[in-house]
Length: 183
Image (cartoon, rainbow, N blue to C red; front, side):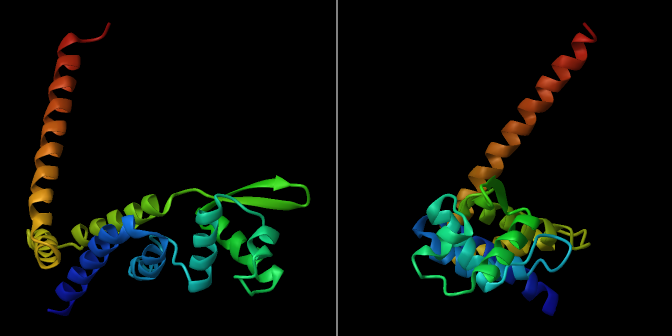
């Protein structure tokens, strides 16, 4: 069953990405390729290695112009190449830009953690939306969690219980509001 292995791999990447997020930007950039490449066209934008490098540099600077990105010499591409790359990242919705003189100042729209969260959620949604109505996709998630770290199963259980309480409280609140009727 090759598709099950692939789906399980998706989950491992998302979980692995999550576990390395606190250790710095480099692991996030390495794993971004894996997370984005699995989604393919039509879901989330795919990022190439240079786009990842530029995005990581913007995360470390907070915001920058193309000239500022090139200033320290770590990026050895032509000005126009960097300009095209940040424009593509902007068009993919990953950057904001503000005119600054004759140039633009680019700022990441999401932190590395937020971007990783979006990618992980997309992978999980893709897994659950695979068309399999059984509980198999959930079993893949549990398998991936237990293979990575058995303690994550306990954390998952706590998160599920917390979410159930939130949903129940919301339903009770909605019911109370419906019982009151229009004001």
